[in-house]
Amino acid sequence: MIISHTKGRGKKIHLFIDEEYKITTDINFWAEHFIKDGTEISEEEWQNLIDCINYKKAVNKCYDLLSRRDHSVKELKTKLLRTVDEKNADRAVEKMLELGYLNDEKYASALLNYLINNKNMSASFIKQEMYKRGIPSDIISNTLSEVEIDNVSNVKELVLSKYKTKLNAENGKEKVIAALMRKGFSYSDIKAAFNELENE
Image (spheres, rainbow, N blue to C red):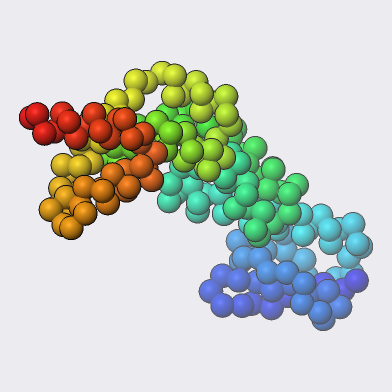
């Protein structure tokens, strides 16, 4: 097996085996692992090189994703598996855990605060959102048990901030109630909130 390379766009480096394209890496990786064109390498050496490339790709992807927003462990791994193999996805996730960039407990707590304080979501919606993001069920239960979510107050806040103008439209109240129920609020909580608003 004879290895060679060509420079691609930007910092990309394309690697070839016996003049057949195999994989792309970047100029920084190639500077560290440079192999002179025309060098003969074994299958084992080639697989080790691919492993290193995929691990670096997985770690870089982690940094990219985590720089945009926090992720759960499961959520991050699922995204990594779209571009790298499972072994290197696991290794990259492990590195993020060691560095402290991944923490399901902290993520669940931050998500809970955001959904309560910024989105005025119901307890059932928050639970569903946490499941959707791959947070383990025991962490979800523990996180939700630490706070008292006032669904009636949240409904009132949403009605006043988001749905106030819609109430004046035809069948406005029914449409607002339907929208609130889709957000996971029970009919009894919605009714109680409307009663309080009317009394106020």
